[in-house]
Image 1 (cartoon, rainbow, N blue to C red):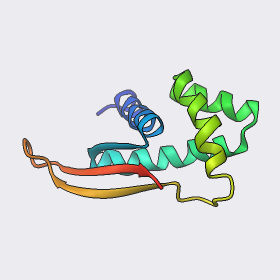
Image 2 (cartoon, helix red, strand yellow; image 1 turned 180 degrees about the vertical axis):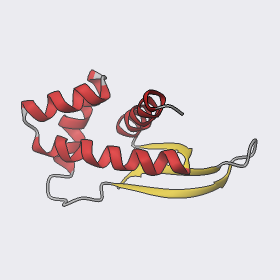
Image 3 (cartoon, rainbow, N blue to C red; image 1 turned 30 degrees about the horizontal axis):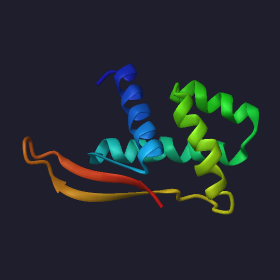
Image 4 (spheres, rainbow, N blue to C red; image 1 turned 45 degrees about the vertical axis):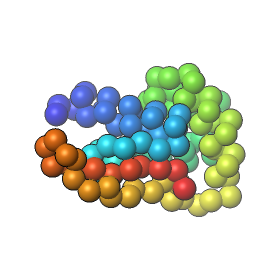
Length: 105
């Protein structure tokens, strides 16, 4: 994958996590998406306009940003980190790629 495709994959995994509270993907994408999601949730905890604009510039989805700042950010206000968890699901049936579930704690 080239950089643009990789960035889009991370954004899509993170948007799915924010909107659905969990997302099933490959293990590598789940781990990369976890790092990206942790940073975005930390910004959402701040809750100010500048943080909202930074997050919107990365996610490019108003619905996801609104849910992040109205529900998820306040939910983790007292938590110092570790907002997400990666659970291995086993190999995918078609090609044997290792599957994982990325979810909010």
